[in-house]
Length: 552
Image 1 (spheres, one colour):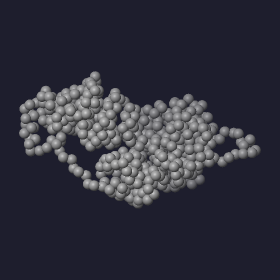
Image 2 (image 1 turned 180 degrees about the horizontal axis):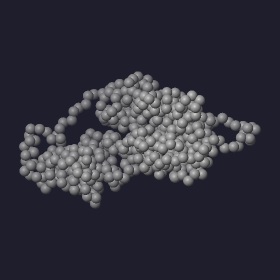
Image 3 (image 1 turned 180 degrees about the vertical axis):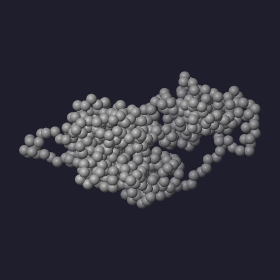
Image 4 (image 1 turned 135 degrees about the vertical axis):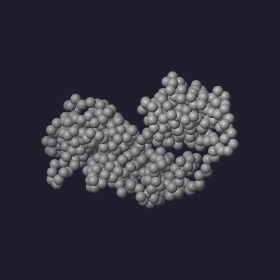
C-alpha cells in the first residue's frame, strides 16, 4: 500500500518524528509514549503533525491515528465522550469506554495532547492508564516533565521523548522556526476563547449553548438545577455531537429527565422540540418511582397494547404501551435472556444465553379455566414453531423474532432461519454473528395472504432484507462500520417501518414505503433493544432509560 508522503514536522523535529513513527511500527515497544518538555518547546506542534498525517485517507495501518482529544480543561467524562464518538462506540462513562474498547481487539492508536492541563488530572490519568492496560491500545500523551501526571505515567515504564533533549532536534531547522516564533504564537501558547455566560437553569439557553461548555459547567456545579444537570450528564455523550440542533437536544434532554425533576421542566423542554423529528411520549429513567423504572431494557417486544421489558437478570416486566404504567411480571426469570418475542394472545418466547427457547404466558394473556383448561392441552402455534426450531440442527442461536405464522432465528455463524409450519428455510446473510432479527408481513392486496419480510443485523455492521423462500438481496439495505445491536420492524398505521440500533449509539427509523424517510436518534448510551408499536411509536431501551418516541 502506498501512502501520501508525509511533510516535515515544524521546529526541526525530524529526529523526534522519526522516533515516533518507529515506536508506532515496533510491536514490542511500550504501549504508552510520553512526549514531555518545558512549556512552549513544541510538544503540541509535533503531535499536531502526527495527527494531521496519521488521520488522512490512505495512511499505512502502522501509522494510523484513530482518536485525538486535546485534554486541556477536559475531564475524564468529556474525554471519554469525545473518544467514543471518534471510535464509533457508545459510552457514557470512562468505564463504559474501556469496556467497549476491550470488546474490540483491533489495534487502536490515541493521541492525547495537554494531558497535564486536564481539569480532573487524576481521573484523566487513570483513564489513560486503563486504556493502555487493554493491550491493543497505544497512546501518545503530551505531559510537561514536572507535572503530577508525568510522575504517575512514568511509573508505567513508557517510552519517553523529552523535547528539551537536543537529540530530538535538527538545530539549523529549529533556529529558523524559533525566529518565526517571534512573529506568531505556537499551539502551546495560543490563548483559548472564553465562552459566554449561560443560565444553566434555563432549558432554552442550555439547549442553544456550546454543549462542551455546558458539560463543564454542570460537572463543576453541585446544584441539581431543577433536574437539568442529571439529565445532561446522563445523555451528554449524545448532546455533545456536532450534528445535534437545539430542538434535537431538547428531545434528548427530555428523554433523559427523571421523575424527580421540577414539574414544569418537562413541559418547557417539550416546547423546545419544535422542528425535531421526534416527540417524547413517555420516558422511564433509572431511579424513577412514579411509575417505576422497569429496569435495564436488554430486550423489548410489543403485543396487544403492552410492552415487554427483559432486564439484565432475565426478569420480564410488562408495562402499558400508552404511559408505561406497570401491568405485571413473570414470576420466574429466564437467566441471561437475550431476546424476547410475543404474540397478541400473550404467548411469550425468550431466548437464553445458551440459545434455548423458553415459552411463557404474559400477565395480560387470557386465563383459561374450568373444562376448557382440561380439554385444551394441545401446544399453541407458537409452541409448535419453537419445538420445530429446537429440533432443527441450527447453529448457536443469538437472535429471535416472531410474527404471525413465522419464527425467525439468527445464529452465531451469520445464518438466519425462518421457521414456519411448512418447514424451515435458511440463508447466510452475515459475516460473523447475527445480532438482531425482525419480521413482518407485507400485504400485497386486500384479503390476500401477507408476504413475510425478514430483516437482520449483524456484527459485520450490515442490515439485510430477505423474503423466506427467495434469494436474499445481493447487497445490504444499510451498512456501517460498527456492529448492529438491535433490529425491530412492524406494519404500522402509516406503513411498514424498520428500526436499527448501532454500537455507536445511533438509532435509525426507516419508513419502508415510497417515502423512504429516515429519522435518527442518539440517546447517549449503548442501545440494547428496540421495538415498534402498531401505531408507529419507537421504543428505545438502554441500561439507564426506556423511551417511547412518536415520529413527527
